[in-house]
Image (cartoon, rainbow, N blue to C red; front, side, top):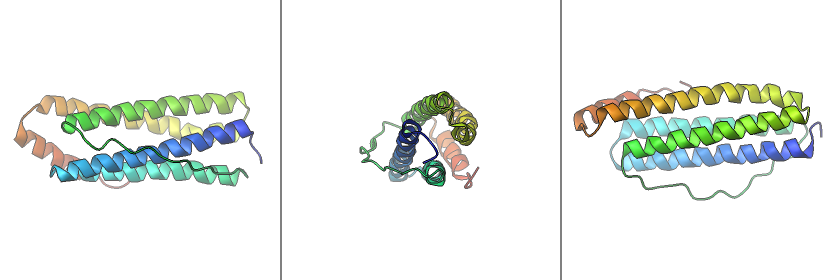
Length: 166
């Protein structure tokens, strides 16, 4: 194995965190679909797929470095929300938590002199800046919309225009 057990364990923890985030987004998508907020449901489903992709990026890295992947049991995601604003508050909290996890993982990899891991993780550091920015922008728009149903439907349509990888 070309990385320390400490780094491998931390990477495995992050793989599982990314899979958990994917699961959370999928639950949010299902809630939105049940509310007929199909644009939001699409946005969140794509976000779920993106988080899964993040997990696979780390999964493949661990394997490429000769490590072992250890998948863990996941807790059930939150499935009930008061409204769409509440959903995206959860999105922002989740992204902020992931940012903290990535920062800690990067710090550990650097301390352990796992330089190939720091290079791999640099992509995640940059990605998290974009993820948090996106969640903040959506929340700001939802705050402006307030309880205006027509504006909410227009915004839901806007969220539905998201394309994979965007």
